[in-house]
Image 1: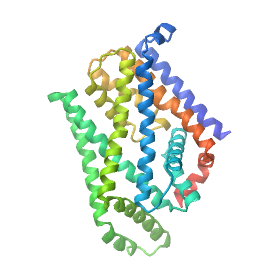
Image 2: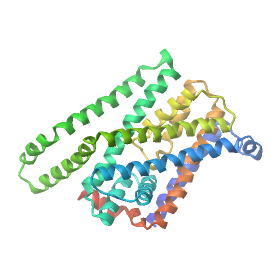
Image 3: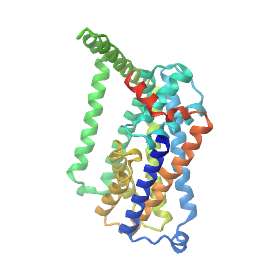
Length: 328
């Protein structure tokens, strides 16, 4: 019953969000509205979105290879999709734990190294979003960029700088923290944490891998930008590319820590709010968000859910085992 309740809650929240967008944008979902959508641009939006996940799978495969674990591309990509599927249904980013758990089950890769590879992904994701957001803000807002935009970007850059400093000092800090307290549980947690940090550090010591992963990460987040741009084109809205780029990156920053699974409500509210700053008609922005989320969330739930079951990763949907792994 618990497994059924989560999808039902997500569907209910999704329907509520849909109704609010329809009301806000005064959108009439009829055959006339659907006929106005250009199928070529919409198909391009779908293709570019899923090419981003193909790239994510390749990136994760390369990160794991950098840690000394050679996994097949199909396995890495399908497990990545499974993790995203779990995170869309279960809160607290348990999809990340699911990926590390399945790596340990199938390839005896430690939880710390599995989570370290995912933490490295997140680091490159944040870096790419900040670069693209700053670039888009320069063109979309010119000299009208609000101070909060630069403060947010600066804050993200500061956090990345702190992380880099910790990584550089981690070998010296490990010995200090291990001997700080005598408790065995404390030492176990410290060893796990530094094993995770050392996994990230190991990737950073490979310049070729760093360049490749940086390029892959930029492509992944450019896919989000082009998804929004193509959806706007599909409904005949003449929104400048820089505005699509800035909006999509702000949305991604807002959804980085989802309040509820799938960031339902966060994504939609942020997108509508940012687009209103550019005087984008509410009807157009609401319809764009509906189509964007249909592609990026609802079709993804179906695709990633099918992958999870077809490739034998359904055990990752058991939150009790995942929480136990997270607490170990």
